[in-house]
Amino acid sequence: MPPRRYAFGRADEATHPDSIRAALAEFISTFIFVFAGEGSILALNKIYADPLTSASELIALALANGFALFAAVSASINVSGGHVNPAVTLGALLGGRISVVRAIYYGVAQLLGSVVAALLLRLASNGMKTVGFHVAPGVGQGHGLLLEIIMTFGLVYTVYATAIDPKRGSLGTIAPLAIGLVVGANVLVGGPFDGAAMNPARAFGPALLAWRWKHHWIYWVGPLLGGGLAGLVYEYMVIPTEPPLHTHQPLAPEDY
Image 1 (cartoon, one colour):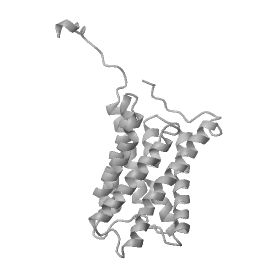
Image 2 (image 1 turned 90 degrees about the horizontal axis):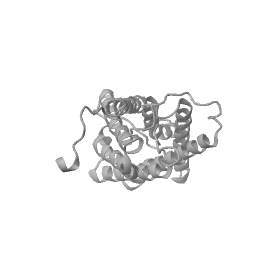
Image 3 (image 1 turned 45 degrees about the vertical axis):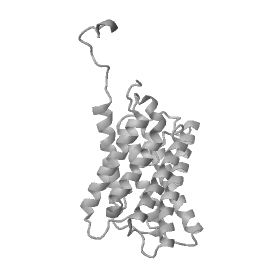
C-alpha cells in the first residue's frame, strides 16, 4: 500500500506535462458531464411546458446525469483519477492522495469545463437559458444543504471505495459505473427537493451563464462539506494505516 503523503507539490509540478495532461482530462470530463446533465434539462424544457413535474422527467434526468458521469469518469480515470467534481478533489486532498497544487489545477479545470459547456449549450440551443439548481418551493435552505451534504458524502465515499482505496483490487474496473449509478440514484432522491447537484462545478457553469444565484451557496457548502467528510472518514476510518498484527500462528491447511 502506498504511504499516505501530504505535500504542497514540487516546484516544477505546476508546469510538468503530467499536471497539464491531468488538468486537461478534468476539463474535458467535466465538460462532457455538465453538457449532458444540463442539456437534459434544456431538452425537457423544449418538450414539456412545465418541466420537472413528473416521475418520467425525473428518471430521464437521473439517467442523463448517471450516464454522462459514467462516461466522464471513464474518460479521465487513467489520467487524472476521474474526479470531475471539486468535492471529490477536496476529499482526495484531505485524505492525502493528491497535492495542493494538483487540487488547485483540478478545481480550476472543472469550473472552466462547466462554464464552457454551459456557454456552448446556450449557443447550440439558440439562446435558451441554462436552468441550474435551486431549492424547490416549500423546501428550506437548511434542508437543501443537508441533502447536498448527505448525497455528496455517499458519492465521494463510493469514489474512495472503488477508485482511490489502494486495496480496491479488481473493484477498480467498475469504479466509473458505480460512481455514475450513485449519482443517478441520488438525483432520483434529491432531484425534487434541490436538484441534487453534489458538485460545485456542475452548479457553477449554468448559474453563471443564466446569472441565477438564488440558493447557489448551498451547492458549494454542501458538497464540499460532504465530500471532505467522506474523504476523512474513508481515509482514517476505513483504510488501515498499518497491517494487522497477528498474535498467533495461522493453522496449517490440514487443521482447518
